[in-house]
Image (cartoon, rainbow, N blue to C red; front, side, top):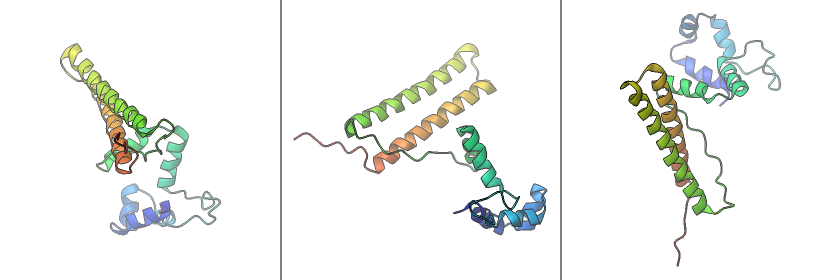
Length: 161
């Protein structure tokens, strides 16, 4: 779906006026967000870039995954990147072991972060909690990536005969 279509569908239930009032913008602006750009080759032409395109642009400029993770967390979930095709130049069994070692390493980093947080003062402060959260998000994303690769048949090891 195009971003304007997503917005159009999203504002349907609460209504354009309710969305506009909550966001403290005009209903005309919200209606404008629901329309395709006048010229598909120039999305800035209408002068009313929608918020989804702006968030995408913010991520494109910064490449900071925390933006996407925060938004997903606000929606009650978490972000998992689509897996890149597995590198088959070393064989599938090699890729499987590389992925597995990576998961064990990520889990070890998470445990190290938790241990370091508690050892110094027997508590976890806000900064330490944020470090733990980031390690956990990295581990969840990598584990989901691994499972997706398994489900798509990237790790089919043939038994020796």
